[in-house]
Image (cartoon, rainbow, N blue to C red):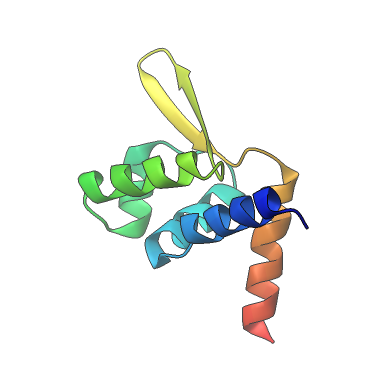
Length: 93
């Protein structure tokens, strides 16, 4: 593994290394959501959710899509979903 790949792996792991961020990712595993929906589902203040969404996006763990006046967040691909599945499986053993 190259040093660049190791740096990217660390960036991804740091990106999800908070309970709220992991919770957001698990919620997005079921489909896209707006920030308001994520606030309701996590019972966290909108400012806090916004902060964590920025960090998740920076790490490449979520995708932001604007449709009209609404913003939706989703997982960027199957690989992110598989990564979450592996984490959940690892924790459940």
